[in-house]
Length: 344
Image 1 (cartoon, rainbow, N blue to C red):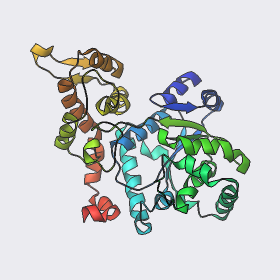
Image 2 (cartoon, one colour):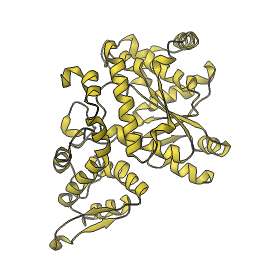
Image 3 (cartoon, one colour):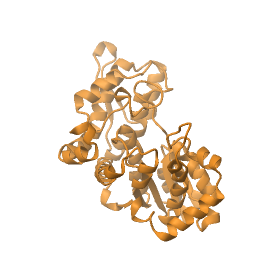
């Protein structure tokens, strides 16, 4: 695989790359390292899977991949994870991410897992954090974390340290590439700005798109109808998709199309499989799609109706998450220990 092919694989299905030429240089020089961090807060859902699936591309392109389980960040962000639950939630996140990577067609054993508490309490890290805090204004830190850290009229100090620690994580993990959702952009632009002044190098940044919720607009962790949980059975998945916001001929805020574009079709492509929609003969009969672009074109032109698309999407999404669902079904204790208020 030449540099151009690796570049296309690494950047496909991303929202933004900062910067293209820097990434091309890294890929041309050898095997760069990439990392993504996840703060173990609420239960993981299909939105996480679309982001995690990208790691399969990184592995195929020859990148060294690290997943940071950012346990201390989860506590610093307005105590989204109580301190006494950090270990249990970290264990649940690691097991679930491994299941997602395997379900995406990659080998989770090729990924290194690290916890923030393994290195963020070291003396050198702490000293650099204090130096960085001395150089960074409150408004700059708030602006960087505004899309990630919970905001309030009376912000806690932990939320201000969060973006500085995420910046230092890039250097501590020796990451050439920082990968995350587009909501992380403010933090990583801060990293590119200030990290060179604190002994590190500005990372190349890759951002994943944030998917729309099934009920329209932004996906909400508190709205069960807006997302597919990784533990949802097939009936639940199909029911959510059939009730999803999917107006005929419209692309904007259409979570059904986004799930297909960023999750289902990339996995079908890995398997060499097609997407088949079953429908009565009077409505054109069954139709097979080898690419997402062809499906979207038919949908936007009115040749594919939401009533035909949504049940098929539900069935395929359920099939894609089935290996994760099955893995978690055999580890009920993980969820019970991580979220005792839900599973007790």
